[in-house]
Image (cartoon, rainbow, N blue to C red):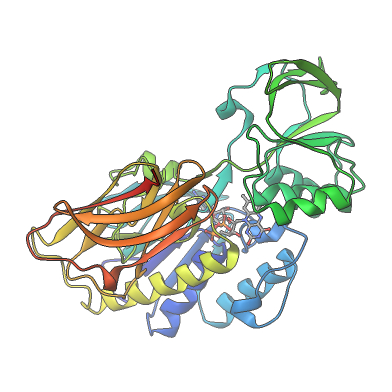
Length: 414
Ligand SMILES: Cc1cc2nc3c(=O)[nH]c(=O)nc-3n(C[C@H](O)[C@H](O)[C@H](O)COP(=O)(O)OP(=O)(O)OC[C@H]3O[C@@H](n4cnc5c(N)ncnc54)[C@H](O)[C@@H]3O)c2cc1C
């Protein structure tokens, strides 16, 4: 280990991405890798997702979330990662110095490289601007899952579920497991956000799904008593319920990045990175769902592993500093909600993340185009939905010297 630092690499966040990166760093021979996690145990979100399927591609078998989290934690332990739980990172400073708080107080740690892997969370009520009373019984899926699976508590019995991303199906499963009967699911648009196929589950469980319906107001003095809903035609009706479960509308857990010197991207709401996961300060890298909302645990794990290998290479001097002018910035064009990475170090190759990941603002049928200097360098027909990723392999972009910007857009069919 470089004696100037407390560790060769500090990994912040002990979910699938952070653990996979820490394990890969050790496998690549990095001597001192410290994993910092604010919860009392490693595992991240899967710790409180009591249902399968997790782990198929990583371990060749299907686990429940907690069993998968336990397997990940064991892996980190066996690979000699220094694990510190109950540690919250509160500040990122230039050149790999971070401030932490744990039971013994505040401290500063430093490392040659720091990996940020703090994940995502769902938008809370406050970010959704829902009017009405402020009773108890208003939760996100993550909070419900930790009540049910970690603390064996039942926060409500008849909630209304808001949203139809895939996590709403998790919410239904969690409710049923705890003996909670949702009164219904509402979705503001006319179709589900996730694949229609997944919405068969609520139907099978006799949970009605109301499309083109919005939550107008929450009613209740102490506990939730009702929800006032508005349909597409503007008609209002009240539904009796004792809880509101807001699902999805994920945002990266980027509080640390926002309060730091690192650049933040308005599309993903995570840090600006290049294809190596490198942030605007090259001592910092990022991996997992912090990079963009939202992928599965398996995807985050594989991404963590790739970035872990890249950091190991960087410590050996393999990721040479990009010469001035040898970067491309990636811009969002029509119908594109986010693109990650937002910067590309030249020359482009399939190493690092190897792909541009793209999501659209709304369902769109058209042609995905990547252009440089007004010339289209990649195109593909797409029938895209906001919850689905689109991927463009970096090594196959027909780039010419002299361009400094790539533009990604989806042209709708006339
Ligand atoms: C409610 C919910 C349900 C989900 N359900 C599923 C599902 O069923 N299947 C699926 O595949 N994916 C699901 N996901 C997606 C989930 O994000 C991924 O499964 C995966 O956990 C992402 O891994 P990660 O390592 O990027 O982040 P996470 O698993 O979120 O891990 C991030 C870790 O960082 C820690 N952390 C954050 N900030 C700090 C800090 N300042 N200091 C120290 N530690 C910090 C957190 O405590 C956490 O343990 C769900 C996500 C949510 C929010």
